[in-house]
Amino acid sequence: MKNRISSISGGDLKLVIEKELFDSDVADNNQRFSIPMKQVKKDFLSEKYQTELKLRNGHNQKHLIGIPVKVLDPSLKEYTLRLKKWTMGGSIVYNLVLGWREIAKANKLKTGDTLQLWSFRDNSNKLGFALVKVSTTTMEVDQSGLGASTSSQNGTNSHTLSTAKVNSLKTSDDTV
Image (cartoon, rainbow, N blue to C red; front, side, top):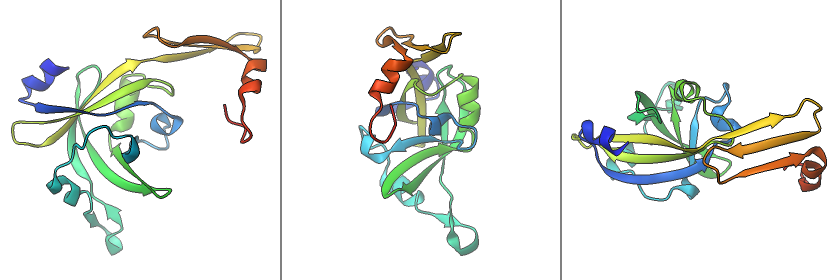
């Protein structure tokens, strides 16, 4: 990845976030990669970009414009997406949109996969991002429907859950 970034005259690498993908990151109807501000490891935005993220257009200045950014996917293919800053449920969340679904499908990303998002600057100081797939989680349900197995291809998270075990892990709000 570093070689690819160097080949486009990129530098100033910063780890923005490492996160496990949620349904909202891979669902066809959402089409976004969310980056909750509370989970951002390093400040990656210049004052110029922070100002640009506030710009709006459309009727009553309702729609955020966002910043066009270059994104390198895990297979090193280059895309152009938009970075937007939203307030969701009282929290600030950055989102990569307008092309995220294409990246997710091309890289077979799914709920439970772990990604790192790195920021960089190109030779004209434009913001770019690189995605690194840290691990892939697979979920298999046996034919009887009584058990499920999840495993991570990086070998750090491998376990089997029975239906009874899953039920015993549920919390009061009925989530696992």
